[in-house]
Amino acid sequence: MIPIPVALLACALLLQTSEATCPSDRPTKQLLCYVERINEKFDPCLCTHLVLQTPLDKLTPQSELLKTAQALQLKNPHLKLLAVASDLAETALKRRDSYAKSISSVVDKCSLDGVEVDLQWGAKVAGKVQLVDLVQSLSKEFKSLEPKTRTKRDYKIYEQFDGDVTTPQWIPSKRKIISRKSRSTDENEKESKDEEKKEVKSEETEEKLIIVRLTSEPQHLAKNFDLKRLSKYVDLYTISSDNLTDASENGVAYHPSRLMGIQDILNADSLIDLLTGLGAPHDKLVLTMPATALKFTLQDLKKNLPQSPVVGQPQRITQSELCATMSDGNWTVERDEDLTAPYAFHNTSWIAFDDQISASIKGKYILLRDLAGGAIMSADAEDWNNKCNTTRPAILATLYDTFT
Image 1 (tube, rainbow, N blue to C red):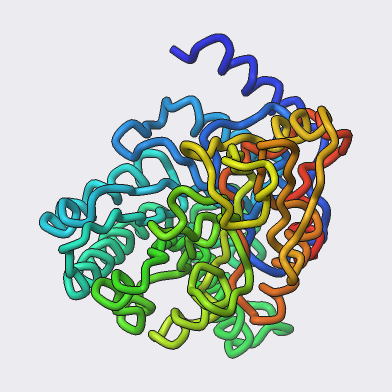
Image 2 (cartoon, rainbow, N blue to C red):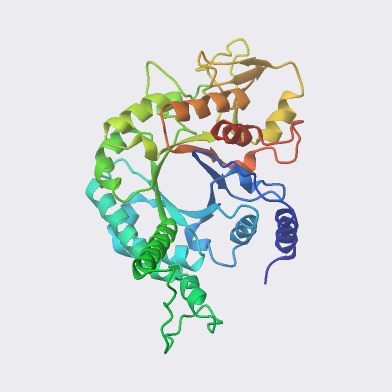
């Protein structure tokens, strides 16, 4: 039985989606929205894919998040729904075939459009061959689901010739049904072939998607990802550019999603250069960016530049919380030279975030390098309730506008 709050949310979404459809202009790039929950004002037209961050073993056809996501497809029929398979790499690679079967089973039962494989790599794991085997097995499992989703042949051709046929099922007639002089046998064969092509095209669009999340650590990329071989089976690679950090930034203030950099690889541009050099097709790479902000506490309020010493661990906050925090006090906003890593400080508080300016530049960068698209982690952290005095979610809407 569906809980009452979930049922009410689903009803609200149904009413909302029944009264409106998405604009005719669709994004020219992929726009993935990762969600842990869905706000009742969530706009599915801004996304091409909705990635559900419920643990795979807890995702069922009765899951609250899944039912709400499926209701959004009434407004945006092109919206793809995906799950995330996230486990320790060592565990998943040891049982590759059974792991692939378990993923395929959930995708099938929940009527999903695919999965993102996000494995957690340990220091000693070297699974380059095993990862290819896993993805290949997953591809085979997904192909075995295709007959269940095959598009039925359109029999309108036969209905046009035999007026006695009243159902879409074709039943051979005792008399010749192709007897019109205006239509030759060659024309009929051509039309039949055209229908075959339409059917094949429709089937191709229903293939399950395989997305692989790439680690941002160069040593793991070299040891565990054979990108040339993986690309035979993988539709998209998501780059963890929403959280580019390592042990060198412990105890200091930093921006987690820098686009450019010169002296390090903790930026998206350097990471993309590395990935394409290792064999990843640029048109399969998806750049991720955070909807959340990171709030630090400075040790010394006079030392407020990036890499300044901080106390404790950073706190992750939503866009609404960011606006509420910065509305109180006299905050100073600064940016890196490329304008894509804004940060603000007031007294000992120091916050790194993304906004419309940085999102627009990153979106144009995606277009310039002809990447597959962008992704928002997590889209539910956007300001859907207009607490920032805006009518649209800042980062997601900016990307959408850039891609359309």
